[in-house]
Length: 185
Image (cartoon, rainbow, N blue to C red; front, side):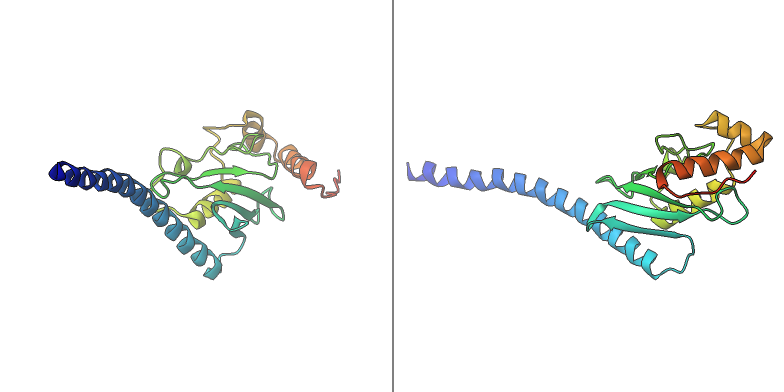
C-alpha cells in the first residue's frame, strides 16, 4: 500500500508541470512580443524621421496611437492624422490592425478608417515594423493605388478633379478635428 501511495504524488507533479509548461510558453510568446514592441518604441523615439510618431496608450504595449503628417506637395500637406495600432499576440508574425482614427478622404481608406495596403494584409512580413508601416502610409497619402480603391469617389476625383478632391479632403478632416479650415473659392 505504501508503494501505491508513493506513486500517486509522483504523477500529480507531471500533470501540474504540463499546465505550467503551457503557461510558460504563452508567457515566453507574450514576452517576445513585448520585447519586440519595446525595441520598436525605442527605435522610434531615437529616430529623426520627420512627420511620424507612435506611442503605447497608457503604457499598454499592445495598443498604440500614432500620428502622421500629410506629405508636402499632396492634398494632405499641413494636415495631421491619428491612427490606432492593435498588436496581436502573434506579432510580428501577424500584421497589426491599423486604422485611421482621424477622418480622411482617400482612395485606399474607407470612412471607418480601414486601410487597403498590401503590407497590412497578404504582403505582411516580420521584417516590417511600426516605423515602416507609418512611412508606407505616409507614402500612400501621396501615391494612392487607384486600381484597388476602398473609396471609389476619392479614386475617381484623384484622377479627374484634383480641386474637388482637395476640397473634400479638407472638409472630411475638419468634420471631426474641429479645425476651422477656411474654404476659399
